[in-house]
Length: 253
Image (cartoon, rainbow, N blue to C red; front, side, top):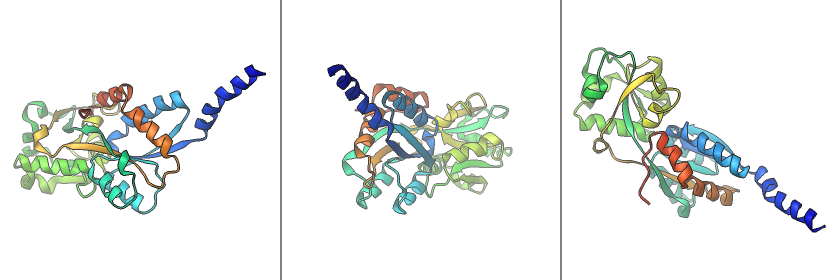
């Protein structure tokens, strides 16, 4: 009898976990790293994670409009703070989980030496279109504009900028040849879909405000406990190694 009770008791946590699905909204630069982290977490816990990726500003607007997300991983900390100020996110849950890095990427067949010349390649006549994320709602787009202005190039290339809805779309423009160069996340340049297809120059950190990325649990979530447990895992050594693999810098603890 006691053995049967023990077996049933041990099965209960897994059964509970199987019924939980966390809906996670995340910045586009996490479109490779976060599913890998989520897959590892699901194997360990049975909790399912459903991801939706986009520009951080666009996701914030979706949350304002009632989108039923449990967690929001932003590419900055400003958007999560806006949600907290509006009572739409839990202030105690906000923390910085990673620092993003911006790169200038060109296709492998480009004759231009981006590794040596950096942004100076953008002055070449062959660079007719330069992809960036839309700075109105994508932190990586704002970082690209800041970097161009820091280098004194923005006014010279502004008419050649093509804007993706988010940094993933900017990367697609560059990879597909719809743009001859693109300012993308290092996380995209290091991803399986782009690795080996191009070459890039990492924009020096002093060229743009830090892409300090924050995560928050949303106030209307019905799975706050499970959301907090997942965020604890994101801060674990195992998850942080996955973030590093995709080019993220980890904040000091």
